[in-house]
Length: 486
Image 1 (spheres, one colour):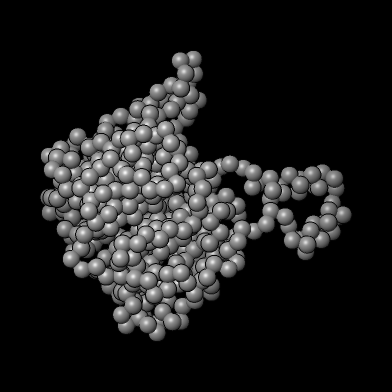
Image 2 (cartoon, rainbow, N blue to C red):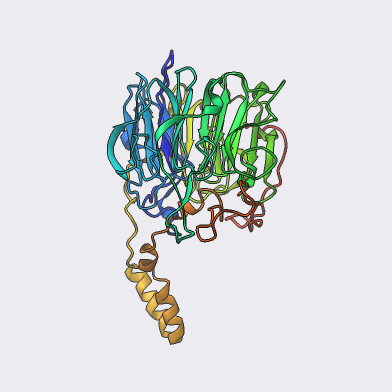
């Protein structure tokens, strides 16, 4: 998916140490299985950034690349650097309100006014000025500005209504064909529904948007599957719709946290109570409207982000994570559980002040204050990139010997079956699992049968419950109250 990098104007700029956990096999994650040996399962320092004062990190919920900004305004990027599967653009904002973008531009998501150039390898100017913030979805971008009447603008793919302009811009590719396509929207356009409102915060999932206005009201629009819009139904919304839970005496306070994962949304409301809705885990019921996350009741949540199906929170003097993990992105360590159905503290970071968090497809980024954390940081490993090379498509000699021994004991039919599953064949596939999981299973509109029969409501119900967690242990029963402190 897309990553977002934003430089906000603050009276005090403070940075910290960047820590990373999750996959380092960037070219293979989401495409091939069995790459756990290329994962960092505990919070780890990255050698090129040791001692660098990082102030902000970003990673999209389906992205396989990362962005970090330091206190001097330098932008660091790393991860997957190809565009074969999309979900690969980055947008930054400068201190003087300009916006620059680079990466994939097939749907006009770079906001340059044209989609003729599908890939921009160098930063280009976005057609927006006085920008204060930016957020990116899978194939679209949202800008916030200080211009009255045009406080929010969008560009990119309009397929599910995520641009908020009232249409998906759908058309048939040919008069004689039922194959559907969606007209790219490369020029940033203000959302008319907010002409008389001022949007102060925004977050994007793969194909949906969450925004908060200056009065504390919450609006969502875009893809409605799994209840991620919070409207007690699963239909898509093509214009912003206010979430009725956050009205009257429950509006969001200034500085509230707003987050969006691939299939879920979250905000902090009165008294710091966190609310979540949508598909928040791989088992159990989906949350069709915002519900308080009682496990974090009473915590002072400063920052939060959600990835493909995992979540990270910085609160008080703790770092908390939970969800479904593929590559150690929850940071629990090599001898701890791999996944968690309920929020759980990351022990290695206990007592540290978290400045910023970000979650990608199978990785997490955390920035911690170095004050009073020197000894703890010294105990963390430092990763220098060794061992991150892409595993060879050719099996090792030992594996080759084992295969030959096994082949001698099997029939010709089984030999053919083994050859058919050779890793080289898998590598030739163009599909990327990170794209397929961007919205959950089977959320794309059919391109062979025309529009959905139920009109605008193209959301999907929740999928069948998954099996036990990766470690073979049944999911932990959800508890209430704060996570147990040491």
